[in-house]
Image 1 (cartoon, rainbow, N blue to C red):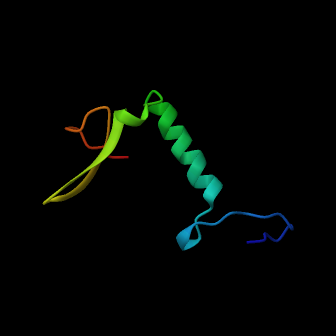
Image 2 (cartoon, rainbow, N blue to C red):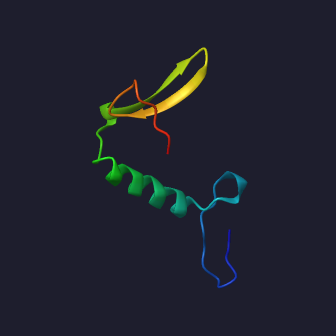
Length: 62
C-alpha cells in the first residue's frame, strides 16, 4: 500500500499497519522480561482459549 507521501506501508487485515503491530509486540515482550518461547503459550479448553506468559494458570489480560 502506498502512502500519500510516496512511502510504502505494510498492512495487515482490517487496515492495521504491520510495523505498528510489531512495535506493540516488541514492547510487550520487553515488559514481560523478554520471555523465551517456552515461557508463553495459548491454552484451549471448553470455555475458550487463553494466552499466558510465565504461568499457564494466569491468563494474560493485555
